[in-house]
Length: 374
Image (cartoon, rainbow, N blue to C red; front, side, top):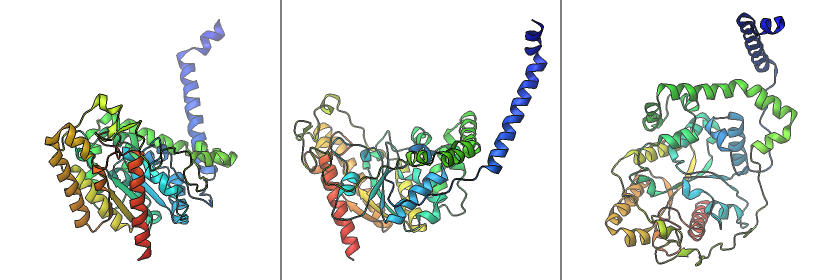
């Protein structure tokens, strides 16, 4: 009983706590001093993906490995929003990557709300590595509509940690601050503290959770890179590649039969944030000598005209205004807007179908081949 009372005395517990804290601090210091940093590996193939957590926390090792693998193989990275996600019968970047008529590989960094402004931190922090890098960015005009046209706190918090955002340290950021400062404005003090603490804790634990772990288990490094490079092969498992699945898509409305039960459409907005974001991104790519090709995506003209004709002029005008920005900046782009008139090209009000993706793939392929021939 005396032993129990002694162990649980406040003073004794305090001493235990101090000892444990001091030991942890010494361990962290020792780790940072004596555990050698894990270096970039020589890869003989292109990484096709980068895990979102490495992008979010600006993990230099993983991001650099990804960028250099693309650079060394002369490949492309396709950037885009939700239209560049997974489609059941394949998307445009998969068709590009599987094309056996050339050796070029096409990697992907895309997801819902992953607009071009979110990529600027990576470009700025890896300025030397992105010099002469080949990028393709898909512009989806629906991000100019009312509920998506403004800065989106949720998307920025999902894809970019606030601490990583603050780590951008360049004098000439070509408009990044202008379009990203709202990230700081929308976060309260508590959120800023938690996000920065999360970011720095990840940095502090790096010698153990990254360097030591990879030195002891090199295979885990490749797994963390999503090293999923497969040989090029035409038509791998896509049943309806390049054709319309009429059992799935209602071509009269240009959406799936499932979407017909929950039709909805939002109007375009007069907010200029997306225009400023796009212009800043183009300026930065030019400043860093990034080889970027834009794809000006279509809007679902068939569906809009059937479901809510009064919205149609504004949608068409936004497409014209985006094209004007690209032309004004002298940007290289593929104009895929005509797809909005083609039955079977969409699955809902904002996402192209695999059939539409195949048409987009052919447009991009022809455009790139034409550029190479000049």
